[in-house]
Image 1 (cartoon, one colour):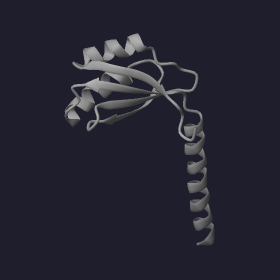
Image 2: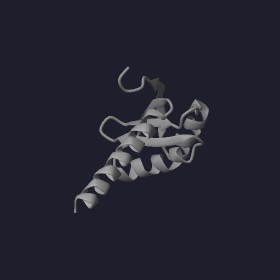
Image 3: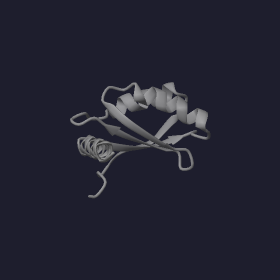
Length: 105
């Protein structure tokens, strides 16, 4: 029984370390203010278009304030013109585009 508990604990520790390493390796993040985000269906539509851009690692959509945080893969940069095109293709208007400081800075 102790061996199984040890293996389980070890597995959780390894998973946590891998998740932490992935978070530390994330690239720059950008905050997009988007006009027209009103519902989860809207969020899905814009996330679908933005996630198709090269280098996008993670998206966080906030319907309440009409924003999307785009986190890029390590070494990737988000092109504003490509974002403008993707947002327009999703049926929305890009109000602002800004790079945000990494968490903890």
